[in-house]
Image (tube, rainbow, N blue to C red):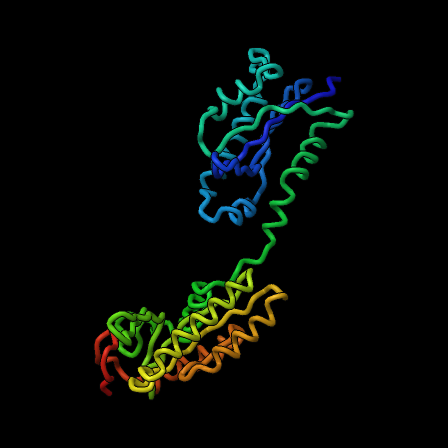
Length: 306
């Protein structure tokens, strides 16, 4: 029995200049069995975490096509008789799978592996675990809760309680509402409604990875709302901030400090994401039974008319 096999890694090269490379697939040829396999991870989370703008769907489509082509070639014994894969595996890959050019997806130089009397199924499993287990680990990482997640959850909870309340024809509520404390300063809020005050809702996520990022967000919002306290007083504005806590334990103390800082600002109410359902019920009740129609411009730059 021939105790060798040939394989090549399919690599995503994010930057040719910086030589940043991640393995996204592997093609394996067993000359004795005349079998060809293309293996790739079920999830490409590691790639997405490393490069958020990576064309994941395109890469996955390539991998599926390569898997199908490998199966097709393995089903044709005559193919191996007409091609010298052992001595020209790189040329074979260039002709049948992917040309060797400067694109982001490229096969590595062929490697030779030694088979210690194991079946090709066992070797495939070993290669997969060696190169792609890290993808499975990253796939289990909990997704960060960002501002978009918070506001969408809030809106979905509102729709659950009242399907029509967010209708664009509802004059008691406004989406993407802008206030303009000065000619140079505009602040947009995702949702606004009018009761005894103009209630303005904004999500702020502290579910970040770095202490500096958390602190920067806290001081930015503190400064922003502190600077418009007089404007808020004169125009009867109330700011509701929907918050997301950090998942990293080492940021808990910094988060508590951020909450204390934001708590010093006037006209600001802090809503923890765990309290969002109760806040939503209050929102719907106020809009349905206590709110007034908006009879003024979308951008508040003057006193409100009740």
